[in-house]
Length: 306
Image 1 (cartoon, rainbow, N blue to C red):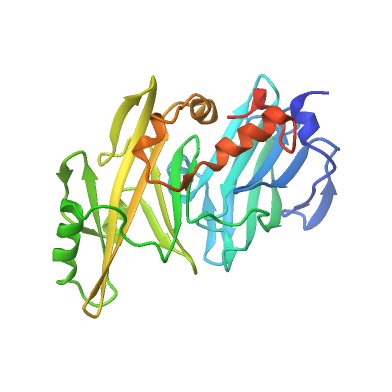
Image 2: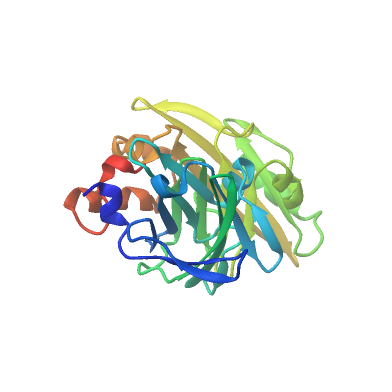
């Protein structure tokens, strides 16, 4: 049995929206998983073909998962044509996930398949409750974006450098509860911008009940690319600042991930010197997945995964 078939256990019942009926797809064709830090829908391309697309659905409407939307909103689509297998991965903090207290996450997707010139749309829904508690800071290095989440009670760490001073000085001119972002590239500190401007530039900065969420595609103009231990690492350093009365809140957002197409493999070869870029306490959930795969527990074999 192939690795993909090992993963695709059971039958996923999907509803054919066009006709309003439900169809049972053959065993091993589709499978859904709630993993440590993301939802996964796997499917057999020998059944669906490679002409397949997805839409994310929430109470605001239907959102086609284009390349740009995926990297800005926390989705990845990985195709393994030589294995006849592909998957959609969605971060628990992705744009359309229904987040209940950072503990329960509900996903809704339309999967659109074209077979013999006929387009069929399937409704896929899943609610996930991660088994592992959230760490204070967590970084997810995906194939098309990096996503940092951190607890809201974490304030600016370390030495008060130039970015801290600039952030505080600019914050006193803000209206109450307005937010600004300062990006830093090496020694260069850029002028503060609003959250809406940051979003226009491809960044996602949001807040859940208990966490800050910072997501960025690779290769942004504000990022710094360095070679560490033979691994090309993309680093984005942002400072989030707001004013509450006469109190200034400064949040340090630092994300650094390998830029390799095979992100997980890069992390596996990234030594402690490679990770010195990151603040203490950042956790690589995908690296923990790799360790479990090597022990043969929980995840599919690593030869078909990033």
